[in-house]
Image 1 (cartoon, chains in turn blue, orange):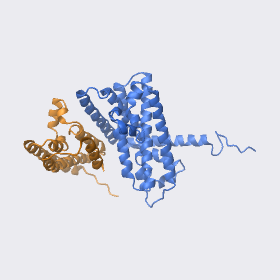
Image 2 (cartoon, chains in turn brown, purple):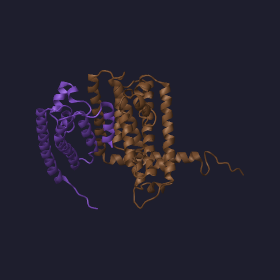
Image 3 (cartoon, chains in turn brown, red):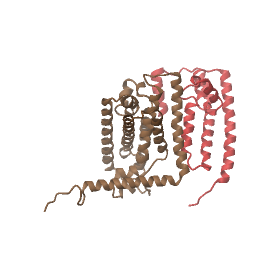
Image 4 (spheres, chains in turn red, blue):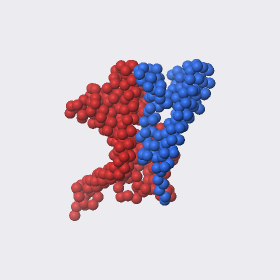
Length: 278
Length: 144
């Protein structure tokens, strides 16, 4: 009798497990959205105000470029696309994986316990159990920017979608890696929060205003440069080297985040706190 | 930590601050700046009597402080019409007044800035009082 495990069936088949996890994730997203829409006024208020919040930044840049028409080759359209990619990427990542900014407090407060009892992969379960309302405004802002100043061709749409994907994944993985510091340092919420804020802030300024050591940092340990250079290196002209390096950064930080989470999980100790999933 | 990091970077590029009398003007305007900032935040927070979520409006207030408040770009660099509009808003009393007085001290300007700050503080205090009294009538408290 063969003891080989069929990849498409049989107990523990990885494909069956993967499709089960995928169905679970989709269900979580549907339930999160349904819960969000229960309080529609709040949802539209939050998403709308975040949209307005991003527009105020663009007003500032419009005033700036009115005074200084070009800065290191950057024009107003480039900065608008920068904000579209940055906000849009942050938006979809926070809508679909809304707990990625809360890993540090979840770990520090012992809120992992409720997720540990579920028969689902822990990390994905934690990430998809929450949807951010304000992030919907960010994502819609990203789409609005594309509609306003993006390249309206199939190639242009594909490049913009790739930019959103890279941006969102970098926000997700870098913030997740910063959040796992809570496994090792206990009260790491402040540190993780500062790293997250630094990533968000630095990803909204044109990459070419940074030189020397700052520029090196932006393309290595704090990869905001791969987001902030996208209007030039991906949208204005397709720089294959930049795109490959960006993909490599996404893969590297993704691996780092997952490894750090699982290594840190071995150090996790439960507490007496009664927590709810969310 | 943010003050230390920002100061270290500014000192590295521009050297230590040499404000002279500007320090006195800066300190004189700080209480008014904190008061106006507090009252602006209070006004937004009191909107919670009517809307469920005020976080979005807090973000917008913060950005208005950054832009119309002159933090990211001095108001003098804005178009004339926008500078005139911003001069009628309370946001510049929070960040721009103390910063401007610190770097370019002038006794007459200090007096005008103090008058504007405390005028806005009084107006915003009345607004917050009005909002609180109206909001408290709508309040529903759920026990549990």
